[in-house]
Structures are given as C-alpha cells and as structure tokens.
Length: 419
Image (tube, rainbow, N blue to C red; front, side, top):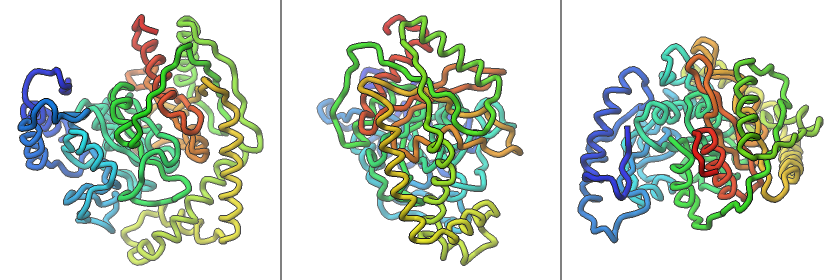
C-alpha cells in the first residue's frame, strides 16, 4: 500500500486507519507484530492533523514499527524472551523519540528472536509462510516486506538487519558504529551493537537517517561511485541461485557505466573474524545477562545457554586482546576503500531457508558489523519468487555518501534512466 507524504491527499487519521486495517488483516498469517497500538496511533494522528502546515515534521504522518528490543513507553518490549514477558518500559528510547518528534506514528511492536540472538519468533516470511524471514529483526523485515509499514527499526549485533532485509526483499541499513544512539535498547555487546533501519526503499532510509542520527549533513556524489566486488571470504558455500543473481546484477551495473574492480579480504582477517566476533559477543552476554539467564534456565533456549557458556569461558585478558584485535581489523578494512569507493558483497549465502533449517548463515554480514562500517542491503534479483540481496559497504562515518550511492544503484535495479 502507499504511504502518505506531505503532498498526499487525506488526513493523517485516514492514512493511519487504513494502515492499521491492512496490518490487522495481513498479520494474522505473518505474526510480524507482538503488539499493535491502534488507540495510541490514532491519538497521535489526531494530534498531527491539528497542527498547522508550519508545524509538520519531516516524517509527518509516516507509520513506523519498532523492534521489541528498543524501548517504547508503555508498550510490550519483551526482548523475544519469556523471561521478560510483560515488560513495558516507562520511557521511549532516544531513537523512538526522534521519530515521534519528526512526525512519525509508531503503530506497533515487531517480534524479535530470543534476546535478539537465539530462538526464533513466530514470524514467517511474507512471500512463503514455510520459510524464515531471517534473524532477530525478522518482525521488522516481514512488516516492511508485506507492505504494512514503510519503515521499521531493527538492531544488528552480527547480521540481524542485513540478513532478514535481504530475505524479505527490502532495504536494510546498518549505519557506522555509534551513528545511532543505543540507549534504551537491549544491550548485548557494547563492542558490536548497532541500531538500524529496514525500509521499503533507499529514499525512506535517506529520509529517516539524519533524524535518527541527529545529523543534518548531506552528501552528494558528482561522479559514478567506484565499486569493489568482494568475493566470498568465508567458508560457507554460496547457493548457485544467489551467485547467478549477483553476477547478473554486476553485469547490469557495468552496462549502466559503473566500473567494478575486485577487493580481497586479507587472509588473517578472514580466518579470525568469526571467532573474534563470538568472543566479544559471548563475553559481554555472560557479564551483562548471565545472572538473569541462569536464574530461569527452563525459559532459556539451548542455543542461548551454549552462547552463555562460551562467554563464561573467556577471560578478562582475552576479551581485552579481542577488543584490540577488533580495532586493528576495523582500521585495516576501512583503509581498503578509497574516497568515493564502496564494496559490493553478498548479503546472504542463500535464499530464505525453510523454517526447520533455521534463519541462515551470519557469515556475509558479520565482518562489517565487527568493523563498524556502514552497510546497506538492496534487493537486486529473485529466484523462484524469493528475493536476492546485495550488500553495499562504505567507509566509517561516510553513511550519507553510502546512501547516495545506494540510491543510484537502486535506480539501476529499478530500470530508471536517472543514473
């Protein structure tokens, strides 16, 4: 469905009422939301309709959804775990408050996996209910993919924005580390946690990014961005359907005038990044949440208990070494891209898997989270009706430039002539 802009006829109340009706109908099968807030959304819509034109924010009337690990005052934010059933925070997270202050209308809370890490939520894929919508931001990805909202907040500590966005055929943006505030958000690892956006288009991300970042600076690209193709650096085998779709996409970029070079990840980085990420994450998980998880083991999945055990085995000194190694890797990876250069990498190793097979590999997304580099996934093809995504990665702090480059690539994918 279409979503209102400042020039769209009709009141905010009409648009939000239509959006809520669509969600109620569509979500009966998808289970993307754990809670809807129709009274609150309509109250917010009435207040927006009462404002003069001069009082309209940049997101005036836009319906948005919030992942349940990000606090929304008075709403159900249970972290995907029965340990926190009924948890309703008193205050909005800064990210939520920034959206509201800009005129957005939160309509509900989307489902997360357990602690944004482990046991899957009830959400299913918006195109095939037999399949997984991805990792912990699955509810947000499915809500956008099903046309229920144009924008939803998500989080990524390993791959939980990029992977579900790619599976569900939407845009997923993980900004540079620290660009968005993470206060009022479930903290798993201070070293790795990112807040981000899942959206219907790059234009939607460009609209909300400066608001979420509190940064009004913009970037323009005068020349066609230089692209560096990163071949798989991880051990998992790429599905043929994904490899073929990406090769076809690369050829379409060449025809559109983009130059494509290769970028090779250093062997020592490729060999160490998975274990390094696990060390950082599980150590902090154990220190931050160990007492709670041990307090009710019957309410904790086997996968999460295994992660907890690994973290408890990591010493303080090893964690300190890992932090230093992360910083070194981040600097090296960031330096591999020159001004105006962006890396192109697979977003996933395969298509959305069957539910019984889990939520898919974290391998293609993990390295860029570890490095804190901004990454965005764009839908670039399909196989058997299931989306294939590509990942575009930029230099740390050059988020606005990355989004502008992504918009130009999206235009190629959509067959527009304005590139």
